[in-house]
Image (cartoon, rainbow, N blue to C red):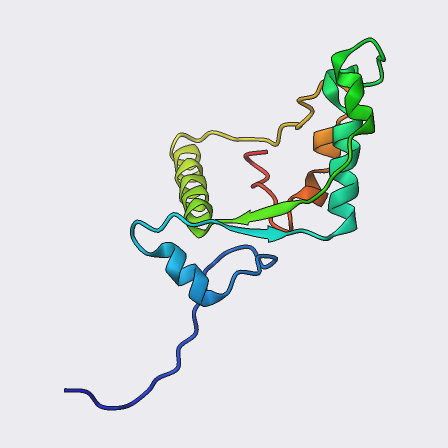
Length: 143
């Protein structure tokens, strides 16, 4: 038996606000066995410039060395940039983040931010963290 009454409801996927996938697609993505990711073209010139700078200038600190295999990266160009919107992965990240914070609190561990200067020269990755985070940075205690 049905009441023939339609009710409106509001759906919140709890994903970064910059994501552009529709609510219907989020629901489809959450279905069991559906591991679809949505690839969204990124047109933001700040992101493009940051990626281009990293590609052309990092190379473990020797991209400038013309005798190095990495020197070819100084001429790198970008054709397209995509943001992957995967609700399951995002929620898995958020759940793991919450679990780690609980473990830290239970163990009375104080965690501080670490530099992302993995390239060893120029702080290219760390310098662009706030540009490349697409509005939702990694948690400060996990960076």
